[in-house]
Image (cartoon, rainbow, N blue to C red; front, top):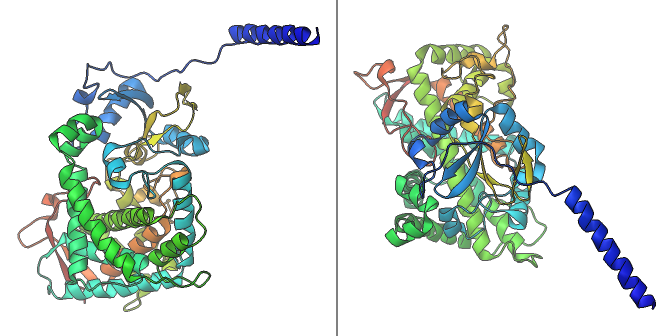
Length: 490
């Protein structure tokens, strides 16, 4: 009898719950508006291959700051403008921490590494990397000294041209070597075959990642696999991995646990030899993390320094004002130091404006880790989301002249440097760039040091106004290959 009563009570309770659910149903997923998709191709016909970010900004003028676009058959939510992007990246905390499964990066990293991993592997790799960079002196004097040493090596190369045209890409050697010093505990001679091979491979990979064939592969992996569109880049990646494995093996045997490490590679090896029950730092992931740091650490800072110098040649008046400030504050001979940013407001403003104006990395997609409320819409778990950083750095509500190169964006009426909340070239929130502190130090010391030493000019017979500042087709918005002149200042 007791069991019967218990069963009846259970049924009554279940009936009550069903009634409650009927009165208060779970909210249905609600997607933002967007253009009507075509069969198979979705909205691809509305997006330019070379400047997809600008096409998305044009769509936002019609559909608002939060809208849906179909990349093939994949529904993707796009966020444009400072308010929408910041609300999503900062306000959602971990709900937008994941990456969607991008086909080519799934093949390359197999869910490992730092930048395209998600969940526990990403959290472990990121926390380890942030902790290790701090222990290696990033953001402090030891790292600044290494940057200044590399600046002297770079100036030795430029002096060898004696004011004659040099290839713009040469400026990328110094940031790349700073990254390699941090990763492997040693700098390379600029003619070292390993150094030359790595830079050449990274350049080819970045161009391939931005190519239409790879974009097609990511949207239609089955078709891309059928046409073997991914094979060239996988071959290049494997060549880089081979070099990295050799460099990592050269760091063996690692120092005993507890002793200070001299490089990121040493720290990775130690971590892999320690207590790692989930295998988050197995050998394959050590290579994956190193690959991510090599690719990101060389390309972004190298391209930004090249843009900075190219824009100084293009805007000679701005270059002159920077050099006047450097001469007045630093005087002849004294190299810049990180703390000089506080007393060089115009130089600091120019460098910030370079990063705002070039929008080097327009966007890297995120993915909802759970059902997520965003801009008044309820997105299901697993929805790809594009926080469009270009739209933040060119937001008309945040910048007075967004389409122009204008250092005044970062200066007040008294010429003091002004921080701007919409300055997000490194993104923001839990996925903010792990190398932001290093990149800021590198860029300031290299940029100020070069302008202190050289008058930067176009090649003979070329007017500054005719210099090409159209981005080259690649994964990042890097400048096109060209030559400039660096004439030593008296």
